[in-house]
Length: 146
Image 1: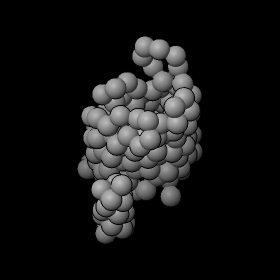
Image 2: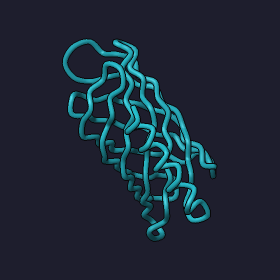
Image 3: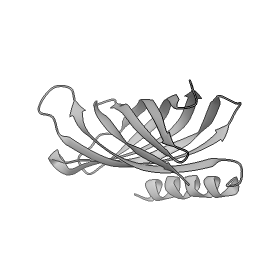
Image 4: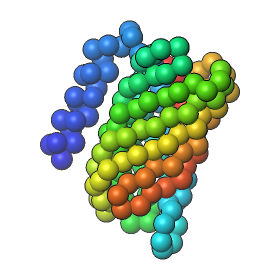
C-alpha cells in the first residue's frame, strides 16, 4: 500500500511541476470484461496529462481506476500515453504501462488502444480496450479537458 501511495504522490508532483505546459483531462467510462468466463460490468475513471510534441502528436502520463463488479476487483493503471490527432475531431492513442491490482485483481503489463472523437472544444467521447496480463475490458466514456 505504501508503494501505491508513493507512486500516486510522485505522479501528482510531476503533474504540478509543469502544469503550465500540458493539458490535464479527466473522465469516466463504463464497459464489460472480455475473455473466457462470464462478463462482468466495469466502471472507471481516467486522468491523463499530455504535452504537445508537435502539431499532431501528444505525449504524457495516464492513470485512473477501474472497478470490476464481480469479485470487487480494482485496477490502478500507471502508464505512459501517446495521442495522434488524425483529424481535427478524431484522435488515436495508446497507453502502456503497469496495472496494479487492488482487492481481487491481478498485477501486470497494461496496454490500452484508444479512439477519441471530439464533441466540443473541451469534451471528447472515448472508446477503448484495456488489456492486462490476466484479461481485459472494453469500455466507452467521456473525457473533459480542464
